[in-house]
Structures are given as C-alpha cells and as structure tokens.
Image (cartoon, rainbow, N blue to C red; front, side, top):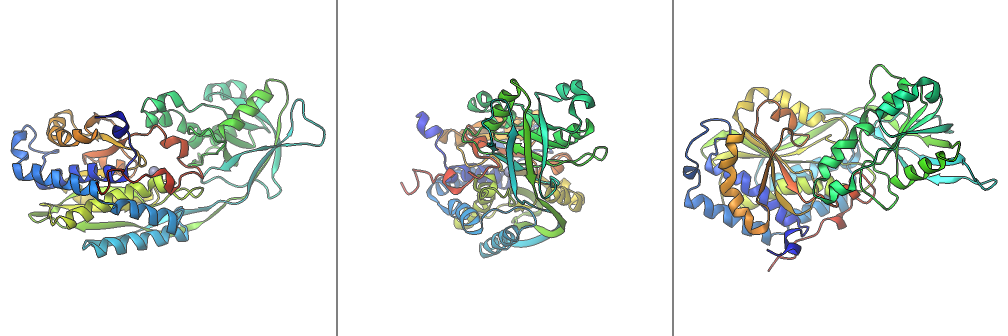
Length: 470
Ligand SMILES: [Zn+2]
C-alpha cells in the first residue's frame, strides 16, 4: 500500500467502513453483549464476507455521501441548534431517508437557541504603542456566552497558562481584569495522529474557564483557540457556566493573538476593549431524525449508525459533522442499492444539538431506556472526512477478536485499526454509559483540528475519492 493512498481524504472511503461494520453486526448477529466466547468463525459465513466486500466496492464507487455533505453544507449552510438552517436540515435528511424507503420518525427535543452577535476586540493600551493607534484582535464568542455591554468593556488583560496559575494569582491580581487562558493545543500530538487526544487535553479551559476566572473576580474570559489553525482563525465551541460563579462574557482568540498578547504583557500593561453581543433566546423545538431500515429476522434489535446534524455557525459544518451524517445516510443507501436486507434493524440517526448541549443524545437515551438492551451497537462518525483508519471501540476486551475479520476486509484500504477506548463519540456516549457497545469512526485527524469550529469548516475540506468511478 502506498502512503499517499493510505492517507487520502475520502468521503466515499469513510462511508464504507461504517457500512461494513454495521452490516456485519446486523447480518452476522455479532454477539458483542451476549454469548461471548462463541466461535467467531461461525459469525462469518462465506455469504456474509462476500456481502461485506460488495458493500466495500459499492461504497468506493459511489458519490452519494459526498452529494449529501455538499447539500447540507453548501445549500443549507451552518446549522447551529435552533436556527432555521438546522430546521431545514432536519426536513431534508428526513425526506431523503424516506425516499430511500426507511421508516422515519422525528423525535422532538427542546434545544438551546443561542445566536451570535457582533464580536470585536482591540488592544487599546500596550507597551510601545504608536500614539492614537490600537491593534485588532481576532476573536469569536464561545457558544452560550453572555454579552458584554452593547458598547463593550475595557479592562487590563492577565495571562495564565493553567488553572493553578489563576488560583495562585487570586482575586487580588485578577479582579476587574480579563483573564486569557493561554494553553496551547499540541500540534505535534495532532501531527502524530492523535488530534482528538490533543483536543481533549485543552478543551476544558474553553468549557469551564469563564467560571474559574469569574470566581477570582474577572470581568471577561478569553481562551486561546482550541485547535491547530495557523491562519489567524478563532475556533468557537461550547462553554458552560457554573452555578456558583458570576456569568462573564467569554470568547476564543486566535492562537496568533494569544501569542501577541502574552508577548506584549511581558513588557508591560495591556488593555483590551471587548465587544460581544450574542443573545440567548428561549429554548426552541427541534428533532433527532431517527430512520429505520427494518431487520428481516429480528427487527426489534437495533444497530445505530449516526452523525450529528447541528454544527457551529462560523463555517458551514462540512467536516463537523455533515460528513458524519452523510456516512450514516449512505449506510442505508448502499444496503438499498444492493438489495441487502439486514437481519437486525439499522437505525440511521442524525443527532441534534451535539455542539452545545447534547440534548439529542441525552433525550434518546432517556426515551429509549427500556429498549437499550436490544441495542446491539451504536456507531457515530464525528471526526471529519479524513481517511478512515478503523474504529475506536468502547467494548469489552473479549469482543475485539470478533471484529478482526472485518478488519481483515478493511486492511486493503488501510482502515484495519481497532483501538479499545474508555469513552466514545458524544451523542452515543449516554447510551454507551448504559452498556450499548459503541464505535467511533477513527479517522486521520492530522488536519481536522486546523478547521474544526472555525469559518474554514467548508466543503472543500472534504475530497471525493480519486478512485471514484475507476
Ligand atoms: Zn462534531
């Protein structure tokens, strides 16, 4: 296998991986949660292996998933929870899955409805400043942030490198100031293929930083963007206020601007004028799209294949996560195309509100609690559109050998890896916590976090496989 092929970005290829495992779980009756120790050879009849290979080839030859990503991101656009575009995306995916012949239900949710407003930052005082000048800072409000006063606020900036440093400064040095959490995203770790781990190391500062700063009397909180962009882009994302702290405005600054502020602060005082005018509107009705391709023998037994339909609002949510929804849709489309009827039900889910609340995943777990014993597996694709490497499996260790024959098939395209994990993708984590075996699609994320949650999450980051049609 040549390396170029192995790491090629390909939506069609990604879709195949999900399809294969889902097909296996269904048609083979893989006993991930019961009857463990059964002879795994019995699970893979020659017919099943042949069908898996047919699915693999059909996925490679298809541009269906790519066309779905294109429609969701280019035609509908950003799909922040509560927006008109999110509403339209629900209709579109539901209609398309109905057209494929699935039984479609819209499962109602009440979701947060936060709307971005104006957002500007400028340094108004700093060492060496030319008279009558300021410096623009690239920043973006974090989702859920409260606004500044309409005319903005001006305060001195204090930089910390972790929560301990904030604590050490204490109220005396923090009160009345803007705190900047200057914690670097580990680009090296992402380059080594562990972008998700790099993200997980620092995303906590974005989520709870504002409340930590507010406890020390800060008037606003900034976080160095959690991501690898080197194009002076700010990465938005969710934040959460604690009940025991005042709610202060919170934004992400580009990594370049975090460096700028930290550098100037070494020379002397830095003051920032910050304006954020987002609005938190009343919760709005929305939906998980839940579409069943009924099983032929055990229709009550379910395998979920999923992605999340909502996205952040700065880009068009192509890699996060129209790509994942498209993969799930293509799973059903290919089974229909090849006339393969699974023994268990394949349930395609387009989740709502992964980005700023996880209401979709939580509500599903609650409302389907009594049926979860019949959920044989759940798969979610939420790592972009890079080349699939395999699966991250939140399963018991003795389930791993049962997946090995699937990996054998996937080896031909460099997608044979399986890594056991303690956690899984966000929307399926509430049902995984209740014992449903969970699989995240493990993809090449070396560039994913350069675009994630930025204005550059657009369709061009998704490439159609060069093998398409060959
Ligand atoms: Zn996502």
